[in-house]
Image 1 (cartoon, rainbow, N blue to C red):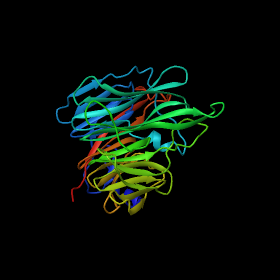
Image 2 (tube, rainbow, N blue to C red):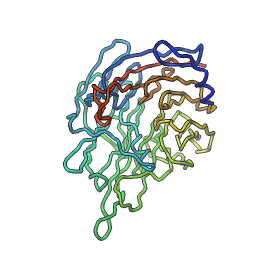
Image 3 (cartoon, rainbow, N blue to C red):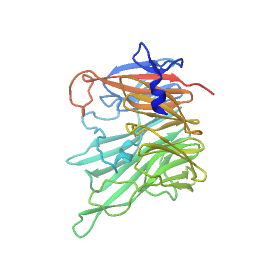
Image 4 (cartoon, helix red, strand yellow):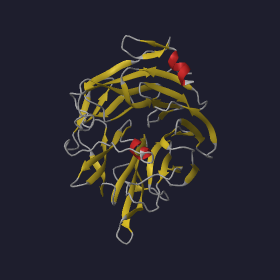
Length: 367
């Protein structure tokens, strides 16, 4: 289905392509460097730039605020890879909501040690408030921040505490932690929830991926392969699913859990866990799902697309010669950040000399 839609595009003067006769994307802003993290909501966009400064801009007024929350020489990009790590390192690191935003910071803290923090701030603020702080070794023991999610009611994040075990402490095991919610300024541990990667939150529901608590030769926490839906207030388990294939990303609509598992987006009923349907997607689909209403957005190497959570049909495809790096849905607005390499350089640095970024949006058809 995606191939049919992509074949029907018409190239615009901007270098972006959409289905012939459909709405055209607009460029909201452009800047040198990359968006290391990105989100859009309530007529605003937020991003973390190449120098690790966090920006929030109103699309209506153009007013922009900046938060300098870290030393850019200490911050560590998340570039680990591997089939069992993909879910952890695809987890959201910046969430923008109408009144507040939250983000994760990972810094070097000495030889082979990392400090991970969760920050929150009011929209329009120039300073953040740190609400969580853990320290771990490079794949060894300590505390790990495991994902971030949020909606207008608040935020949630996961924490895993890993300890060394065995006669010579050569093995590691997740021994504690949990899921923490933030409706104000103080975190609250969610009752009954195990240590888990937090994936998505909406309408009083939270999607989490419980962590493997078996011993391992590597201390990096790993998901078990299942996803639980829990009440964000009571922690009560609502449903649980175990999709076939490697878990890569997940998102929630008010009634549906959508999971990117392998090369399929699989949909489940939140209340019962019943399978609703499965849609094949190209193998270059990124580990990034976002939802609003009944729409689910995802991205590929050179395009962004929207899937209908009710029917499983891919209804919108926007192709671009730039590389989409993040995607967001704000009602009928599909917004994404995309980058272009403009000079040879160190990909790890993602500097302003080597990359250019633009933020684009398109208004989706309202049926």
